[in-house]
Image: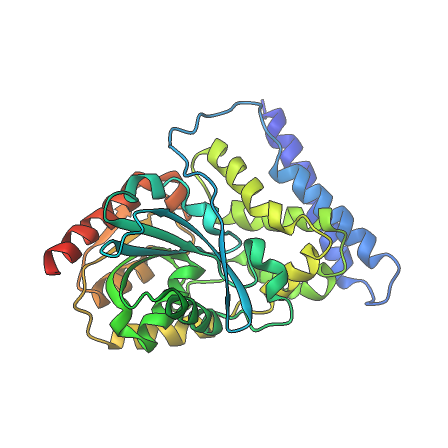
Length: 346
């Protein structure tokens, strides 16, 4: 007998897919175009969120929400900060990916921050609470590296350990290609690199960015959920909690416009350029590369990055893309190993 949940999910996804195809093939000025897109979004949402009612516990301590801001070259930048702010502490700069924000590091920070360690989770311009700030600006991977560099200069940070995930991994590669002197150590987890992205759901959404920016705010929720689901969590409770944290900044009148603006700046050519330059440099810094074996971005790109950094690849059996949330203990261990080596060199 077929699972009723499976039948329900299939029905909604097929309905959503059919509506999406009809919307995309409709005449551009057709009065049915946007209603069909809205229906597609609603049905996809119902399909992706169909649930058995079963829940899982979240076994990890979460860092409290903090927020700091500074005006950097005319841009209001935001970050979370935890740990030791004394002069001799080691800065650990955490750079999130898409469509996330600094809260994605909430389970790792408590395992890393402490005496002698200052964790700063920077928010990329145009994402999270900085979403409105990024409208009308270049928020590409290459430009984010410049924003990050300017922020570090503003805070007087001349050397740090960088920890990055997804799109943030590409940003950090670009940053260190331009400014290798900044790197005391590096941890990359499931990073954008070479041509391993964007995944299918993101490509599909990007092709519809012109229509997305005109949708009601609630209708972009399924597109975001589809992207997050396509990349994947292992723990359903973490996935649901995480998605709400990702979704919250988009749940505004400018959310659809900001989402469409982000999609237009997702170019694999940027990461190909950054990664090829990154692997051509000689790196002599403590480093770790961590990857989920089931990550849609593919383990092969992780192997290339590990080889460039003269380190071995740490793989997580069963791990998907959001390893920093599903397996924070593995990432935190990698960060602490790099910290130990950095302290030994100082």
